[in-house]
Image (cartoon, rainbow, N blue to C red):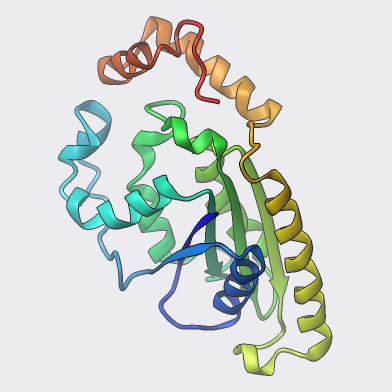
Length: 228
């Protein structure tokens, strides 16, 4: 099993420790990236990826190592602490660069057979909205199964998290790892994802962006073929 972890921050706090705990329990090969250290660009809003090709994005080369690792992974882990009730700015800036691969544009076939986990922590609240920030992209990429795990750790460092909360984290990550391991290699997307894909398929038959319409047609998705 190949696992790619994207950290929405560069420090190794509670979110980092939980992501690592989960990955270790899955016992896979891990590729790991830290934002903004490994990618620190903002989308310029040039629309080049939508209208022409993602290969023409001014940040394409810099982003390629992370893109390739995500494409090759069986499991994606997006981990972000809560910053003002949402994902970090670094995580948001990173995800902004993948709008072109939403199902409304040009989703990648490999995404439909992947699993993903969105992990967030906070001293207080905001985990639900933070996980949603990340899960939205995972869903619209077509990721087959998405898990969300948010923890109010009531501390600003993992060393200060209580033993009671750490035991809950241990139990939850073990449960998640078992579910992921069970589905690994046998993934098909859920009904909601397939329904949205079908709606986009109808749209692409008419086409509102020639680049997108050509892509779907070349994949055979406007016909009988499906990416799962």
